[in-house]
Length: 253
Image (tube, rainbow, N blue to C red; front, side, top):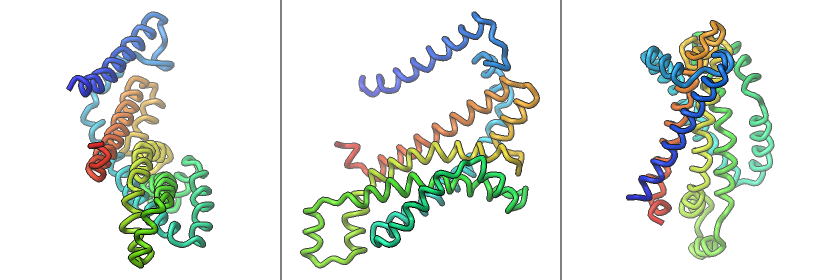
C-alpha cells in the first residue's frame, strides 16, 4: 500500500512543485504572457472555457481513437503476414519506414485537398499512418523472437504455420505489441492535434490553439494545450490498462 501511494504521490508532488516554480518564475521575472503565461492564468481560462474544451477534446479524441484502432489493426496484421512470408517482409519494412519518414505537416494538407473540408477522414488518415509504423515494427520484432524449444515442440506435433503463429508467435509477441501501442497512443493524439492546424473542420483542439494564439489570447491557447496533454495521458493510461488486462501474467510477476 505504501509503495502504491508513493508511486502516485511522488509524481503528483513533482507536478505541483513544477507548477509553483513556473508561477514564481513568471512573476519574479515579469515574463509577458505572449512568452510564457502563468499557470494561474491558464487555469482561469481552463475553468472559463471548460465546456468548449470538453467538446473539442471529445472530437479530437474521436479522430485519434479511430486512427489508432485502424492503424494498430493494420500494423499488427501486416506484421503477421511479414513474419510468415519473407517476400512480404522485404517489401513492407522499407515501405513502412518510408511512410514513417513522411512529416505530418506534409500529409495533412494533401489529405485535406483529397477529401471534403467537412470530413474528418483526413485527420484520421494522418493518425492511422503515424500509428502504423510503431505497431508494425514492435509486433514484427515480437513475432520473430521465438524460443527454440517452442518451435521444436510445435514441429513435433506437425503444426502448420498459422497454428504455430496462433499458439506461440502471437502470445509471445503481446508484450512487444503493447509497447508499440503505448507509444502509438500518445502519438495518435499528437497527430490528431497537429492535423487540425491545416484547415478542415474547425472543431478540434488544434484549431482552437491556433485561433487563440492568432488572437493573442495566449493563456487560452495554453489551456487548450493543457487539454491536449491531458487527452494524451488518458490515451496512454488506457493503453496501459489494456495491457494489464491482456497480459495478467506479467502484472502478477
